[in-house]
Image 1 (cartoon, rainbow, N blue to C red):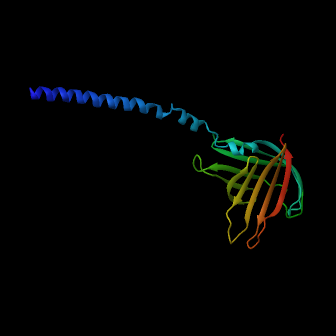
Image 2 (image 1 turned 90 degrees about the horizontal axis):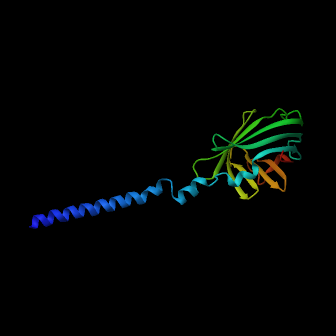
Image 3 (image 1 turned 30 degrees about the vertical axis):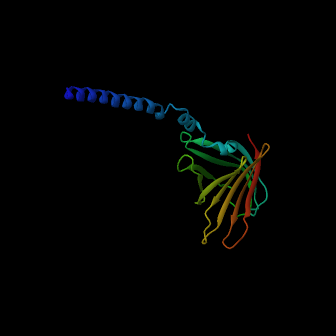
Length: 192
Protein backbone atom coordinates (compact mmCIF):
# COMPACT_ATOMS: atom_id res chain seq x y z
CA UNK A 1 0.00 0.00 0.00
CA UNK A 2 2.80 2.43 0.85
CA UNK A 3 4.47 1.58 -2.45
CA UNK A 4 1.26 2.39 -4.32
CA UNK A 5 0.98 5.77 -2.55
CA UNK A 6 4.63 6.53 -3.25
CA UNK A 7 4.16 5.76 -6.98
CA UNK A 8 0.97 7.81 -7.08
CA UNK A 9 2.71 10.78 -5.42
CA UNK A 10 5.67 10.41 -7.72
CA UNK A 11 3.37 10.55 -10.75
CA UNK A 12 1.58 13.61 -9.32
CA UNK A 13 4.93 15.29 -8.56
CA UNK A 14 6.12 14.62 -12.10
CA UNK A 15 2.92 16.10 -13.50
CA UNK A 16 3.28 19.18 -11.31
CA UNK A 17 6.94 19.61 -12.28
CA UNK A 18 6.05 19.12 -15.95
CA UNK A 19 3.23 21.70 -15.70
CA UNK A 20 5.52 24.23 -13.98
CA UNK A 21 8.21 23.60 -16.61
CA UNK A 22 5.67 24.03 -19.42
CA UNK A 23 4.32 27.27 -17.93
CA UNK A 24 7.86 28.64 -17.55
CA UNK A 25 8.66 27.85 -21.18
CA UNK A 26 5.42 29.45 -22.38
CA UNK A 27 6.01 32.55 -20.27
CA UNK A 28 9.53 32.94 -21.59
CA UNK A 29 8.54 32.82 -25.28
CA UNK A 30 7.59 36.52 -25.47
CA UNK A 31 11.09 37.50 -24.36
CA UNK A 32 12.48 36.06 -27.61
CA UNK A 33 11.32 39.08 -29.57
CA UNK A 34 7.59 39.60 -29.17
CA UNK A 35 7.48 41.64 -25.98
CA UNK A 36 6.78 45.36 -26.21
CA UNK A 37 10.03 46.19 -24.44
CA UNK A 38 12.11 44.30 -26.97
CA UNK A 39 10.21 45.81 -29.87
CA UNK A 40 10.63 49.31 -28.50
CA UNK A 41 14.38 48.83 -28.08
CA UNK A 42 14.70 47.35 -31.56
CA UNK A 43 12.80 50.29 -33.10
CA UNK A 44 14.75 53.02 -31.30
CA UNK A 45 16.65 55.14 -33.83
CA UNK A 46 20.34 55.13 -32.86
CA UNK A 47 20.97 58.16 -35.12
CA UNK A 48 18.15 60.36 -33.76
CA UNK A 49 20.47 63.00 -32.26
CA UNK A 50 22.37 63.39 -35.57
CA UNK A 51 19.35 63.45 -37.91
CA UNK A 52 19.50 67.24 -38.23
CA UNK A 53 22.70 66.70 -40.27
CA UNK A 54 21.11 64.35 -42.82
CA UNK A 55 20.77 65.62 -46.37
CA UNK A 56 22.83 67.58 -48.85
CA UNK A 57 24.04 71.01 -47.74
CA UNK A 58 25.55 73.95 -49.56
CA UNK A 59 28.83 75.20 -48.13
CA UNK A 60 30.25 78.64 -48.66
CA UNK A 61 33.47 79.29 -46.78
CA UNK A 62 34.11 82.42 -44.80
CA UNK A 63 36.75 83.39 -42.29
CA UNK A 64 39.35 81.24 -40.62
CA UNK A 65 43.11 81.08 -40.86
CA UNK A 66 43.02 79.12 -44.14
CA UNK A 67 42.30 82.44 -45.90
CA UNK A 68 40.40 80.59 -48.62
CA UNK A 69 37.08 81.23 -50.30
CA UNK A 70 35.05 78.52 -51.91
CA UNK A 71 31.74 76.82 -52.39
CA UNK A 72 30.61 73.25 -52.65
CA UNK A 73 28.30 70.71 -51.08
CA UNK A 74 28.44 67.94 -48.52
CA UNK A 75 26.01 65.15 -47.77
CA UNK A 76 25.36 63.26 -44.55
CA UNK A 77 23.58 59.95 -45.16
CA UNK A 78 23.11 56.51 -43.66
CA UNK A 79 25.16 53.74 -45.26
CA UNK A 80 26.02 50.06 -44.78
CA UNK A 81 22.43 49.13 -43.88
CA UNK A 82 22.16 52.07 -41.45
CA UNK A 83 25.18 51.04 -39.38
CA UNK A 84 27.15 54.21 -40.12
CA UNK A 85 26.58 57.82 -41.09
CA UNK A 86 28.83 58.97 -43.92
CA UNK A 87 29.68 62.51 -44.97
CA UNK A 88 30.82 62.99 -48.56
CA UNK A 89 31.93 66.41 -49.77
CA UNK A 90 32.64 68.01 -53.11
CA UNK A 91 33.95 71.40 -54.14
CA UNK A 92 32.56 73.56 -56.92
CA UNK A 93 34.70 76.70 -56.72
CA UNK A 94 37.79 77.51 -54.69
CA UNK A 95 40.28 80.33 -54.35
CA UNK A 96 43.02 80.28 -51.76
CA UNK A 97 46.70 80.80 -51.08
CA UNK A 98 49.25 78.61 -52.89
CA UNK A 99 49.53 76.22 -49.92
CA UNK A 100 45.73 75.67 -49.73
CA UNK A 101 44.52 72.52 -51.50
CA UNK A 102 41.58 73.59 -53.65
CA UNK A 103 41.28 70.00 -54.92
CA UNK A 104 40.57 68.81 -51.38
CA UNK A 105 38.44 65.68 -50.97
CA UNK A 106 37.48 63.91 -47.77
CA UNK A 107 35.27 61.28 -46.15
CA UNK A 108 33.92 61.22 -42.62
CA UNK A 109 32.34 58.11 -41.10
CA UNK A 110 30.35 58.21 -37.85
CA UNK A 111 29.76 54.97 -35.97
CA UNK A 112 29.12 53.49 -32.54
CA UNK A 113 31.01 50.52 -31.08
CA UNK A 114 27.75 49.11 -29.67
CA UNK A 115 24.11 50.19 -29.39
CA UNK A 116 23.72 52.88 -26.76
CA UNK A 117 27.45 53.70 -26.76
CA UNK A 118 28.75 57.19 -27.65
CA UNK A 119 29.33 58.06 -31.28
CA UNK A 120 32.82 58.03 -32.73
CA UNK A 121 34.04 59.21 -36.12
CA UNK A 122 36.99 58.75 -38.41
CA UNK A 123 38.06 61.25 -41.08
CA UNK A 124 40.17 60.64 -44.20
CA UNK A 125 41.28 63.08 -46.89
CA UNK A 126 43.25 63.11 -50.12
CA UNK A 127 46.20 64.72 -48.34
CA UNK A 128 46.74 61.62 -46.19
CA UNK A 129 45.23 62.97 -42.97
CA UNK A 130 43.39 60.58 -40.65
CA UNK A 131 41.61 61.99 -37.59
CA UNK A 132 39.75 60.00 -34.93
CA UNK A 133 36.94 61.88 -33.18
CA UNK A 134 34.65 61.45 -30.20
CA UNK A 135 31.25 62.86 -31.11
CA UNK A 136 28.84 64.66 -28.81
CA UNK A 137 25.49 66.36 -29.33
CA UNK A 138 25.26 69.00 -26.58
CA UNK A 139 21.96 70.35 -27.95
CA UNK A 140 19.32 69.10 -30.42
CA UNK A 141 20.83 70.93 -33.42
CA UNK A 142 24.54 70.86 -32.61
CA UNK A 143 27.22 68.20 -33.05
CA UNK A 144 30.85 68.43 -31.94
CA UNK A 145 33.59 66.13 -33.22
CA UNK A 146 36.64 66.34 -30.93
CA UNK A 147 39.96 64.54 -31.46
CA UNK A 148 42.13 63.31 -28.60
CA UNK A 149 44.42 65.87 -27.07
CA UNK A 150 48.01 64.92 -27.77
CA UNK A 151 51.12 66.60 -26.46
CA UNK A 152 52.94 65.78 -29.70
CA UNK A 153 50.45 67.25 -32.14
CA UNK A 154 47.40 69.47 -32.56
CA UNK A 155 43.89 68.76 -31.36
CA UNK A 156 41.04 69.15 -33.85
CA UNK A 157 37.42 70.17 -33.38
CA UNK A 158 34.80 69.94 -36.10
CA UNK A 159 31.38 71.36 -35.29
CA UNK A 160 28.02 71.69 -36.99
CA UNK A 161 25.09 73.80 -35.87
CA UNK A 162 21.70 74.21 -37.50
CA UNK A 163 20.11 77.66 -37.03
CA UNK A 164 16.73 77.80 -38.74
CA UNK A 165 17.45 76.57 -42.27
CA UNK A 166 21.20 77.37 -42.24
CA UNK A 167 23.86 74.84 -41.29
CA UNK A 168 27.10 76.35 -40.04
CA UNK A 169 30.33 74.47 -39.64
CA UNK A 170 33.79 75.07 -38.26
CA UNK A 171 37.04 73.15 -38.44
CA UNK A 172 39.27 74.35 -35.60
CA UNK A 173 42.78 73.56 -34.43
CA UNK A 174 44.45 73.88 -31.03
CA UNK A 175 48.22 73.54 -31.10
CA UNK A 176 50.09 72.06 -28.11
CA UNK A 177 50.44 74.68 -25.40
CA UNK A 178 47.56 76.81 -26.71
CA UNK A 179 44.51 77.37 -24.55
CA UNK A 180 42.02 78.17 -27.31
CA UNK A 181 40.97 76.58 -30.58
CA UNK A 182 41.47 78.71 -33.70
CA UNK A 183 39.19 78.41 -36.70
CA UNK A 184 41.00 77.11 -39.76
CA UNK A 185 37.91 77.05 -41.95
CA UNK A 186 34.27 78.09 -41.44
CA UNK A 187 31.31 77.56 -43.76
CA UNK A 188 27.54 77.84 -43.91
CA UNK A 189 24.70 77.10 -46.28
CA UNK A 190 21.21 75.78 -46.66
CA UNK A 191 19.89 72.33 -47.47
CA UNK A 192 19.59 71.51 -51.17
